[in-house]
Length: 417
Image (cartoon, rainbow, N blue to C red; front, side, top):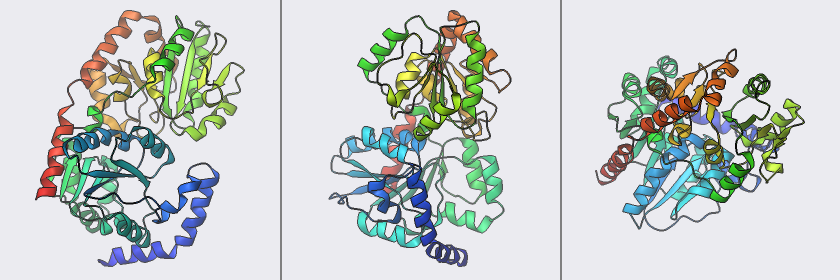
């Protein structure tokens, strides 16, 4: 173990009591599952399935959804295998509970301490380590068994510059992987700049994901209840974006009194606080109102899991959150795949290539806090322009399926090599 890793390991052991306090605070805020909190420290009650077990670590919602097609393809091809998916967030855990196929199971990833990951490895004994996107945690990688693959890897220019301040650590982290499959060639070049050797670009798994699912009966009920109304969606929003969305709603409503605005916070537990902050008599909180909105409902705060597919299908256009603030944006291909024109703010560095492709195709527009309402209005009012943008959005997402097959082939080669 290198000197810096020894120090890191010792620090993790030292702060474990503090991590327990941190976990309890997260529990009080609804960010941890009380029944499964021991998993965050490497204690598991689920039994390890017999046979070969591939371990996939995907931190949150976006990463876990992007890897689902790979998991499904692998299990179809390997009927005796099982897959373990670990995530960090409770939201991702809920989605995995709904969408993982048979022979795939979910566990929470532990905090990045040596003892926790040792317990994890002893319990699960995985036969391969598949890390999604950018989860370069030292103790995870120190304890993870080979072969180790980094899938759909992304590394922003800003993050790369930060890692270059500690080149030996960065080189060790990327060097732990037997193969790295980068999201784009730009990501691959940045990873090579940190010292990664085996870097390929099989395609972007987020572009290859299937359309978000929907309950058809619920969709039909909402379509009937909202027929004829202009609808726009603000998806995966972060604070303080909801305030700007609500201000745009008021500006748009002045000439469109039947407008319906839907806000889906990125983290569902924020639904009630967002609802309280808006102070709207015509607002509805989805978790407390299972029925579709009435004609007097002007704004819906959707704080339920797994319903973005419903709202993307209902909306005339979707604003993608995390982009009016320097968060880096959320996945713009989710609405595009469903023929929903896309708006986003100036901060889309997490999905720069996707955002640029959508803009070039005429499927998306960039906006900001000062002209949000003005950016929404044309697609609400001009059916022909909206249909043209929707068709362009579908075209952009139609040619991405090869990434899954190439990723599966790379995993198989690593296991056989």
